[in-house]
Image 1 (spheres, rainbow, N blue to C red):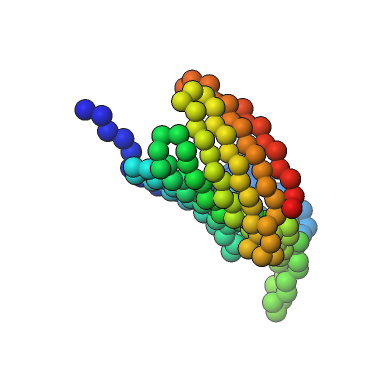
Image 2: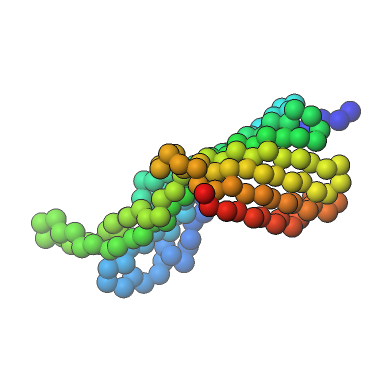
Length: 169
């Protein structure tokens, strides 16, 4: 009998014991917990989807990325992806309440992007996958770029080489 996995869900978070116990300089704040990461993957005939959600507990921010693939046959496929990305910059600030003073980290989000990508692909029976697509920005309402991607995947599907050509619109 053969069987496969339909869906998986993984939650993870790490704790930095060195960060939790280090000596703080004035203006520093301990943040030993990492972001909480949730990963979901599901596969049913002709469809595959995976999503990643990251929550940054010290900043109360969430980022999301998702990808869905549709395979009308064994050669062609359609891929739709959504991604959200940003950088968090922290600035220590002294807070005084009555006679007590302490530092907190103020978070600032920079370089925020959102992208929606649509790709059409061709999977060869042996080791090669070709994709062509366009990227759209929901923030600006404009098409951002088009791209061509060539994946070379040796037997075993455990590593590969990706060549990507992108051109802004």
